[in-house]
Length: 551
Image (tube, rainbow, N blue to C red):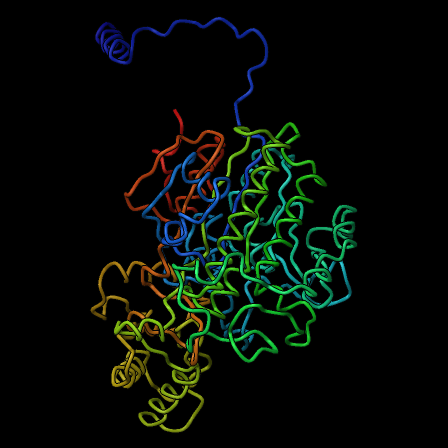
């Protein structure tokens, strides 16, 4: 028996490449190669096709540089139904899904509290940088770790992690739980602020940037088009009926000027390329102020450009304003990449670019081309729900909330009146299907009961989180939006115009090329983890894009 086992062991070792031979000790310590810095770039509201719609007008140093010298995942999609800003920024970095992370929307209804909860709200912390309430934020509502957290774990906290965006959720959720800091813009006074979740006082470099008073400079300028208006051939005319206007203006036409909105002096700067300039300056200040990419461990800088979302909502994806924004954002990216080359060294940093969601065509524009589209006012769903439930089951507050196309029923009242979820579902579904623009209604408690294409069903499964999601989900027909009566656009659906977004990898460890195989947002964090040789985030469900990784 002993001889037989030895023979078997010999065969196994021979198949495996022969007997293992002792290796000579390495002459000196061996360091695992890693990039000096990872830079995550998120464009808020960027469909995949924008890379090519404006390609001929882009310069060589921004989007084109990332596409030509990096790796382009051309068929990259979201894997869940909640294509909103909070979930998008969350899952790009955590590789998970709302069903696990709990970030099911920008807001959701909390049955225990009886109110809406904002994705990054945190009443236990206070603002750092001014005396307002805009800093009462943290990542505590995100139930999973992300790639920045995993980097902190792998380096025993030695890596620096900084998150930056005009929007608080665009800065906080990418930076993760263990970040050194996240910074966002307060429209009230024009300062970059943070939260006591991270620190007790702003670093001197942030104070110095705030002291430059860049918002005061920008708000006194006008947003002029970069090119002559007749050169915006990828867009509609400057004055069309399916755009909305800036605050204080009577027409949606260039040039645009800025006046206070919502009682906030600098709010309208967000809806302009000046918002990208503010973000870029903050990113450059962080790069120098934190000395990122020059330490002994890999650092991480996450930057989100929020202005494309504000502009898209206001004017629509086919507007001159949207095109002008992307041509200017291209220049901003080029400046940022040049600064990274100078500080960290070209080839020494890893960068990726994606988007938190896409956007539908403006419904008025689609209809002008005889493409099916339409709009339902924000009161349509709540009115339909209330009418249907009261007609079937009598008076009462049957619906606690409607948000994110989800119906939150008053479960206590249903129990009191002995009305089952299934009975309520049949009533609600039958009533909605009588209305134009509604494709179907799904019961989250019994997903298999509704005949919905498997592709969409998987997106809905990935968004359902029992403690934070609603009971029913309203599926509108393709091209239909909710709450945009006159113009502009929105997002949040399962359709490709919302799910198909860029995913570009560039720099350290990346093999130039592209793929048209289907990849997903949940693949981004595992790909970065594989490049860094660290464990993927604890709720990650994606896989590395191996074609992009240099052998």
